[in-house]
Length: 215
Image 1 (cartoon, helix red, strand yellow):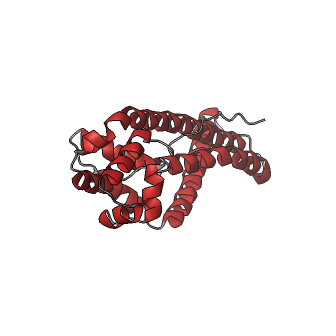
Image 2 (image 1 turned 60 degrees about the vertical axis):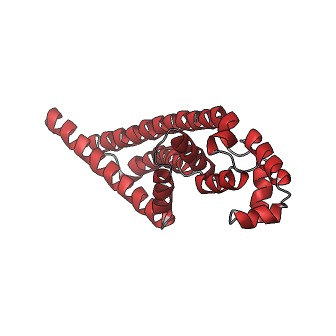
């Protein structure tokens, strides 16, 4: 049975309860409906509803618009939620570390198996099948890591945290937009390159071992 670590789910959605309450309070104080507020900050009414029920978290641009409309600072809006945001970011970092360990472990095992298969002059099938079985968890871990890195809610948290720290909040957003283009094609190319690199590494390692053994 292949070992696979258990990952606690990232409860990214549903955060920002205090912000949700403040948005609703300020909206009602101004006598605005959700539709009115949506038009004022250039989003849909459903988005406002999601914010007020803490289903999703506003991005930095929306927070800036909300703070200007409500007459309060961004810090005042999100102050009570900053620790929750940082906890979510820390959980994502731990998840990425575990996924990275899985990728490296199974990737190295795949290369070592290919090398051993070549050293002992095994047929293609006995080499390829176990190598494929070892490669699948590594590829799955890479896919899950990619999903975690590009979670929109986490990007919102990162941007808000950067804004409060006086850093550029748009860096992560621009990166997310850039890597999001042609996502499937990029992953296919990366997978093919990973397979080729793994085979080359295995072949190279096997050649070195065979040379050392005098074969």
